[in-house]
Figure 1: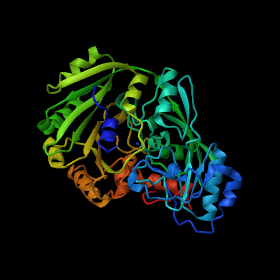
Figure 2: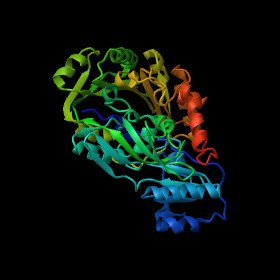
Figure 3: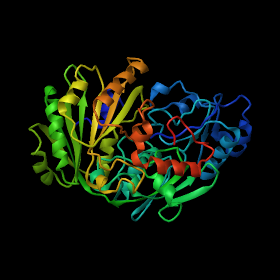
Figure 4: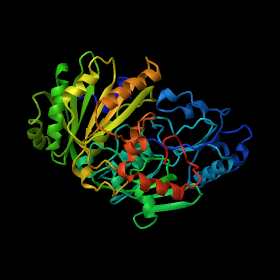
Length: 458
């Protein structure tokens, strides 16, 4: 069995949701005692035990950031107290679910972190799952899978369900079942005015629309999601390995293969850096190995392995091993058209590390209208996640390399907000496309005073 995509990121020091942060700076006379009256010892200040461990982000490029306080919330009233406090004190504030914001927007310098890890219960009843916004993906899968149900979501075990859902949510079963946000029935959300609201198709419909792909931290702090689930399917996980010099041909063939693939087939093509780049393909098929093999035969001959698994076993497989993170720089593009394999190979040839992870779109992902939810990239054929480690080079040097690869793909002004890049050119258009104007109207309605403002916030 192949090393899975998240394990690759971990073992290569290369490795899933950006949340917001407010404006202004924390001042020395901030009255933290006022908030401590409501939270007790769940308000952690820099002088308190455990502060450094609690503040550490997944991306260690930002390990130097020091918030003024971290609020360990366990109920929505705690979140209301935090937003009320931050609004009155005029300090930066951000929600945090799994610590995976690529730009560490969930860790505002001199601000207040609203840590949702204590709001993580998962309750499954029939075809509905209520999930606390601080839940990480592996516990979500364990609970939903144990009930014989399935939810399309991400792969890394410690990614928070909150940021993942609010930005869209790419899944290894997404071509069959859609984005994570497509399964959102309703959300409980505390808006900056302190109100606890329910957003659904019938209550606060504009807010409900915005929460399905409009990015984390822009409209309020979600405390609970209700998802529609499906009976858990059986899957077959597969891997295709190719010679190092074949990356251009493999990527060309993979794009054409996935353009004709049935909804049941999802796959990724990873092009790895090196003196000569290399490519490999892996994926998951909703169905049996017997039905998968004829589909694999349509790809160029390769060393291949496959194994039938249940839904929960597959999610555990993709979850990878526990990790506390490392320094990296990442960006993204959304590919609407065929990109020549020779171009991709040239971008990665001669690089000493790094990778581009291409995930297949199509199927259920593309059958939703671009304006039906806030997620705008319904015409994408592929998403591209560009990942380079920053352990043995400076952050500035790594950002130059990532930008050259990102822009070299030639995919226009596009990007995926869950792979948020603080140096993305024209980021509002890249992340939100034609949905931008409506999203900004929703943000102004629910956060007119910009309590949740941050550098790439609406």
